[in-house]
Length: 433
Image (cartoon, rainbow, N blue to C red):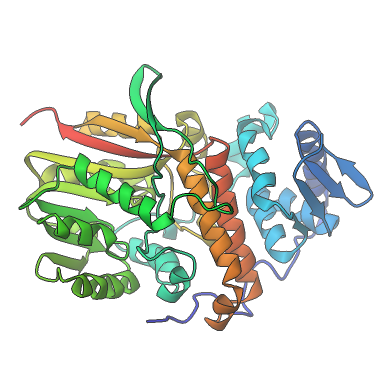
């Protein structure tokens, strides 16, 4: 089924009008000084009118400086992204340019300004708080755009999360914690490498292994996606109860499950995770905790703890960020929140450890980090998306949407390529009966 695009071709609130006024003029001048000071010491090339700034590297061209600095001065990183959507600036190697910035993210803004963060950054609107009333709309904003849109850039498994490529694993110690780290994939998106569908299958199968899913296992999946994990769990002989808040995903996932011959083993429900009842031997969730909201992490894990049978295990794949950055940004309204994931927020591993230790009997027993694999996954998605320009346009999405989606994929890739973000498979087990 194809839905009507959530954003019409003529309505992009906030983009038609460039910020103005005396206060904007002042903030624009400050933004220009801060931006130039930041990029002057970075391996990038910024062409700002007649001026060229930076040490040389991926190039950014500021086409309309007045607009660019007005937007950045008025709205910070949201304005930075919006200036890209309007074409006020561009970069041929967008991902490469953003990766340099992401690597310096904690240091881009002067220390004195970071201390005043709470004064000038916008807080998320109350409607983005993931209450049981709001969460459905937050999820629909992204996942109910159009199943056909996601088909044009995902592989045949329709897996919308990081793949795990066939690389070696090393055991490292960080912050006193031992965990596995996957070495970077060999062969990027443009020169072949392992097929994405194969790497996506490996990701799912490993998570099912970690959760102990075998013949007869009662599985709860939080966040259905388009059904790939449920199908693979059923193929092992498990019974699966999967919950989602996306009507579009539910419809297609049910079709895929039936086509695979597992309709009698898989039940998919349009249901908030907080309302699930029953007992399950394994609970699995792939990149859904990012949509929970930090206010509800405790509720999320308490729910899992309540539903998990004695001896059961939990497998969660989560995008994570450093703990100090998580603390600094948890009340910040971001470009990603505004345009892509309303109510979304990334946890740190430490935060998850603290929440589960304080409020549940669950503890992390195994941890695999593979952030570089997400960078590769996102690069492949972006290449496929851009190659499908005509299909995207035929679905009713306009040029601004295409720039937005390209920016979103490359902005995300930069986070993982720079090491600012990570993705982890976390296994949880009980410490008491």
